[in-house]
Amino acid sequence: MSARQPLLTVLAVCYNHAPFVVECLESIRAQTFQDFELIITDDASGDGSSTLIRDWLAKHRRDARFIAHADNRGLARTLNEALRMVSGKYLARIATDDLWLPAKLERQLAVMESCPERVAVLYGDAHQIRSNGEHIAQRYLASCGISGPGPSGDIFLQLLNCNFVLGVTTMLRTGCLRRVGSYDESLVYEDWDLWLRLAEQFEFVFHDEVQAKYRRVPGSMSRTISLWRSPNQAWSDILILAKVLQFSRLTPRERARTRLRMVRRVFTLARHADPRALTALARVIGI
Image (cartoon, rainbow, N blue to C red; front, side):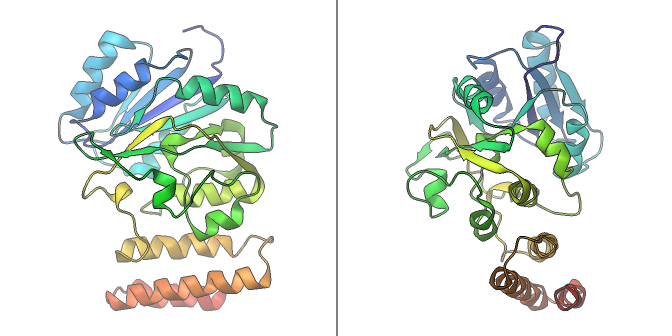
């Protein structure tokens, strides 16, 4: 890779992905566009993932940066550490249990280079696969209730209703990402908050080509996230919606609907006898 500043940074994020990580890295190596900065993180996996990554890097990408944690720090903190090292104009991120199709980077770079500066995120659809690689009939956007192409332009309100932007399908403009700030490390899931902050200021563009495979792994937090499922998820949703209420663009009706969603999450905490329920209720009343 040339010594100049790269057009693109690829960030691969691993945590206990030993059965899948080499296949993921090979999907990166198979990209038709190869002039990118590569950063790989491993957040103290306990299954030998780190050794597999080191062996692969020694064979194929000695120039890559590898961040290997001795202790588990969580996804958002790990991402923020890696983002401080990103030097590319654009950023493509992949979890190492997912896969890219060979033309993903080349096709999306061509689109992003033709987009105006106000476009922060290019995203697409993905095939869904099981742990063993078997395809699931329904694509990702369809599983989110979206038929046909995904929304483009100002998609803030659609994102507020449903997080349908899948990280493995995206390419981000790094300057826009740095403008809205880093991942919120107080949350148990990170993407929805970032997408909302980006969509509040910038535009998204839907790339109508499937260029990724998204693996549905049973028991994985990132694969089973549900805003009603656990107290931690409900609390994170309250924190995110509290931020949304600070956005001046909300109409009174949208503001009322957002408050109602927060109240429902308070009830989720109360049903679990979570002590944060009173704090959450105070947030709803105080905003």
